[in-house]
Amino acid sequence: MNLTIYTSDVRNFDEEVDKHFDVKDWHGSGLFDKDDRLSLDNYKYGLEPYTYISIMVDMQEQINELKEILNAKP
Image (tube, rainbow, N blue to C red):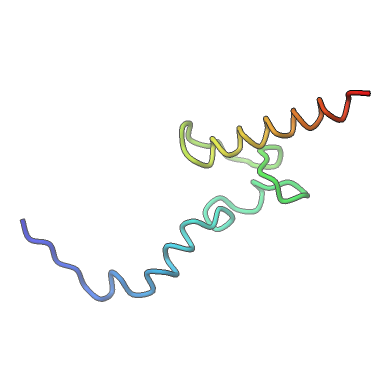
């Protein structure tokens, strides 16, 4: 097996990696609420199950529910 890597494949590699980790770049700002927390309330599209972003959204929803429970206690 031969593997060929061109300089154009690795040009701006750090910038490309950073861009791929930027959730707003991939999914848009609609994935965030007014407090910049992940939320599906204003998001028009579905997220693939078992992806990192869908797991993070689920975790944020759990955190929000726990905050509501804690704030409701006298």
